Image (cartoon, rainbow, N blue to C red; front, side):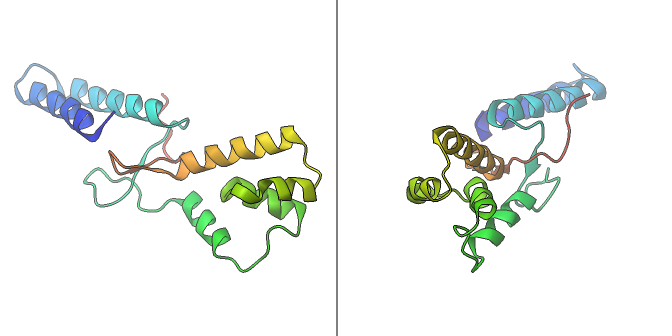
Length: 144
């Protein structure tokens, strides 16, 4: 869902309410349904944090991004210890050095594949959707 599609859907709900064709409960439920639909399409999480100066902002900081920044700019060599290397692999990713790290710690192909999957999930959890400016993390449970 693009920003324009999202905005059009919300505008339609507001117009229906202002035109008297829907109630305030229907407006609220429609907005919530739209948000749930948005989250289910872009993230494996059931949560939404809007980053930036959006009038709908519900949070300003992403703790997962803070962890990533802290590790990435730490002077510690995360390749010296098996557990540190695993954490670094999840949060930052080893990219071209992954094969070397796997060899160093005797991680087999299944460990390597799992580490890649975990890193991809972590990256999605901290990614900003350029169309919407949303930062998706598990903060607000939208399930009833």
